[in-house]
Length: 339
Length: 273
Image (cartoon, rainbow over all chains, first blue to last red; front, side):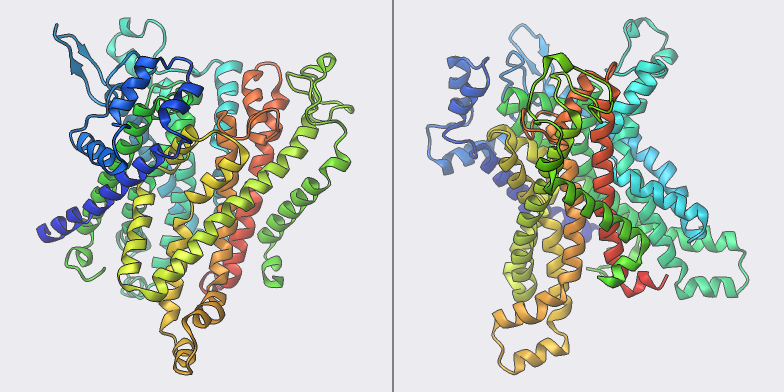
């Protein structure tokens, strides 16, 4: 296991280098140099902040040197300060000479997005798993057809449109759910339990919207996985030796059908993080997605580069965890039989 | 193709796409108004015989703008996926045919691209360039070739040592002949399936970007930016949100049904079921 872990870990190094190259390349996509294009887009950009930008990315030096310096700063997690938000640190808090702490922008936004994504994953597992299993067991019956229809619509529905419709229906027409932000007015004066309910109410729609595509995908995946496994010889054997159907389905089939799901979850992380842009900007939730969207609108380059890099690194960590979980769950992988 | 159209879901998908293609082609002839004509006397009218889908905040006819929006949606879908598929075929073919270090390098690049959240990547590029329909198509294309690459590579790897390929090679066929007359034609079905499904997601991404104001720019109509207006007026003009959303839903559904039907028709394992 240790050998596998080390191998898997070293395998990440070229990926990190690749990510840094791509991020760096994107920064140089701008026609001319980013200080000039920034000036043309962002009215807030003063000569001073342009100078800062030049210093931040050492734009006066050759490209190779710029890249080296940039990587060096990334390695120490120094993403600079934001242009748009009064020089706030992009990633982590800083202390000034009076001991006042300024929180980092990503530091504040990341936990919110992680919370939404974890809740969406819980929703996906809680709903998609039973749907997929039922669909497979009732293959080609009415229930299966109904679930398949739901899956197709789930794939095709634009998340932002559904968000708008739900916002209108549950928030504007019926006032069942709040339509923006994370907390109601006066949130901090409520007892902890009401505070929790308040936050959960605010999170209900965003979590549903960001989980919907995944929900459809995983249902279909579980269904097909179950169908595949149910046709295997060992299932026939289990039935032939007289095990009851429940043991066969849940004890033998489901466990094996679920294995690949671990990888799928790993692979879905970038989609979830990226998808947070739409849900968060519609519902005005101050997470990574909204931070990124605002940064794009303001051409706040340090924030854009910071989130791009952190998002990619998070994906790598997620994939690593998924692979480790797979190795833990499937002895064939950790003994190197597969791959 | 006959086999595909015998599948009822695929047939529905095909009809939807054909219908939209037809409407997009004849848009200038059937559109009752000029898509950009502002009419201050007809602001936010609800659907009626004069305005089938009502009018927007500037008095423009929503039905007309929807028709023109379908052109954008089709164009973005086809061009973006065309770019992605072209890159994917070239890289996947090279990786799968020559294997070795070229394969390793290409697949690592794929891994890197897959580990950057795509929507972030697209938005970042748009932030450094300017949003326009051409940039959107190119950016979506350049960020969605990884799936095709993997697919083509896998097909090539599995076909490379089949007897008919080895026979052709033994007869002295050049690499290019092996690739273009033996390997590529035999990998075509999965490539077409993944392209059709790719168009579906490109349509979703474009509408999302336009909705966020970072895609197709006003006054050019796209389903996504009609929805941006819809959001603005959601309390008094439901028609501005309903129709573009439904149009996107139906289009994407159409591509998905067609793609899935095609896959089922050519995959003996699933078509038996």
